[in-house]
Length: 326
Image 1 (tube, rainbow, N blue to C red):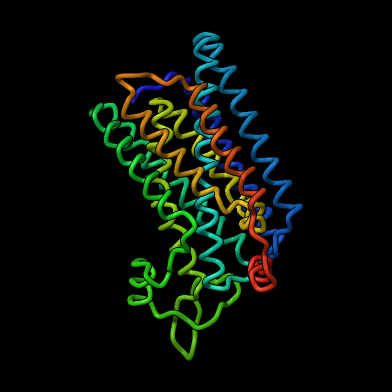
Image 2 (image 1 turned 60 degrees about the vertical axis):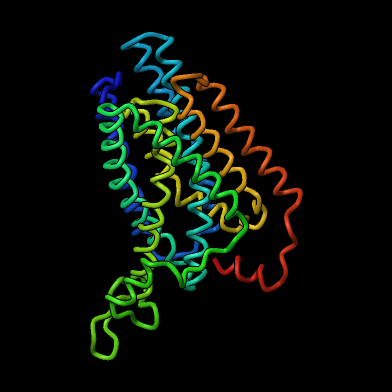
């Protein structure tokens, strides 16, 4: 794996991520279990986006000093495109998280800690997957074609499955956990384990954490190859991915209340995956510039979101109550 990023920039990124997680933990502990308001979610979303853009500015400056202005422009654009793709694909994650929380009737006050655990797991998991993926690409160039075909097929599958509600009862991971673990019938605060009728049992919150982890594994298989379609630089792939994940929790609470308004977004995400997969498969025949890729992704998402808002179905009393409960 080869990257042009200077060593000090790696160190700055690692220190930033660890510091961000530490601050998040301190804030979470200080606030305690509480329901995240739309205003708080909007504020934190803006903070994470601003920090990501600031890091991209630092990245541009570092490459301009260490390499050249042309390289700095290319790397900054690659980061921005990768960040946007990961943020876009994270929307599908969020809708699945919403379904899991609704299915288990997780109280809103507990959801913040569950998502924090999921983010830490996602950072560790995706770092490993990105490094392995970078090594595979460096050793076997044809792996990119496999990634491309996989993304194209995933996009087609997502298009056909759009609008259908997944059935958690048929989820093999959930079936396995229920078969292996005794689960208490109710929550015990934010605890993952409790005692019920004298026996040590897992709380439903442990199943929720595990399912969110499994969900992130599934979506990482899509999103990581998608960013490798933009750049083969593992530093850009890793930083754009992790920076997008850090803001996932705030993004969840921001979008959860508006889920019904973006009912067509899955179709847009399917088109994005199909486009990126096609780009990867054609990379040695026809090179699509990063700026063009960024424009296509932004265009697809913008059209889909605007069209979703214009054609959003009216939310009846029962459905509205279900969403507000989150």
